[in-house]
Length: 254
Figure 1: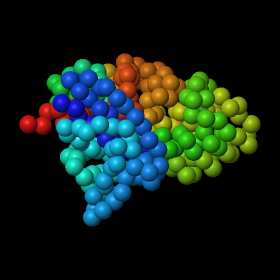
Figure 2 (figure 1 turned 90 degrees about the horizontal axis):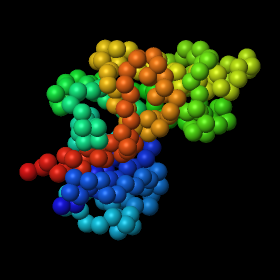
Figure 3 (figure 1 turned 30 degrees about the vertical axis):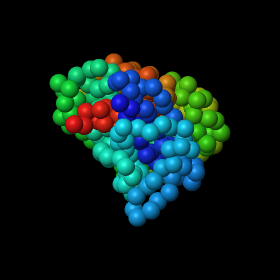
Figure 4 (figure 1 turned 135 degrees about the horizontal axis):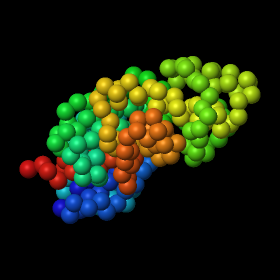
């Protein structure tokens, strides 16, 4: 059977196809362009033109993500993001005991898994300060791209603002003070860690499975390892973890 998992994210829509318990295709679209060119809303349901996406007919479709709260995807079951990411991490890592850290485009999730079961979680969907959008904005202030930003974690400048908006003003102030690009970029990466550290200390974090688009930030991985003294595991497809979890759920529906 062919299963399709769709993560309707705030920044990107991720689609995964799974057959015989193997991921056979992944594709990502900018969220705004996806809705403009491949989807239409009718009677509070979202209809997707799969033919325009070069995706075959699937036996079962399951969706998750930011978009599922706004509109129902026609012909699909929907599950909460927490469940999708938990199932995706189980599939990708094959571990029974771990803490899952998901840093996405506009929110963050930390999930404690013990004995293969989800036992605790913390989410932050009220502020983008510990998300990919925050990193995008701060990289723009520095005049660099996300790949370059992710290279720096040593000698970080101190940034104390806990607000994504005020954080930009604080960063500009540090630029005026004459700090180097390396120090400024490292400081930005450290602010992400400082915002999630209290929740990680509360839940526990060894080993730590790191997923979401921000998992591609190599500097943050190094910061987590250094500051927590924990094993940090980034699965093969971190940004597709939620969509993979949808496929796993679809395959288990009786």
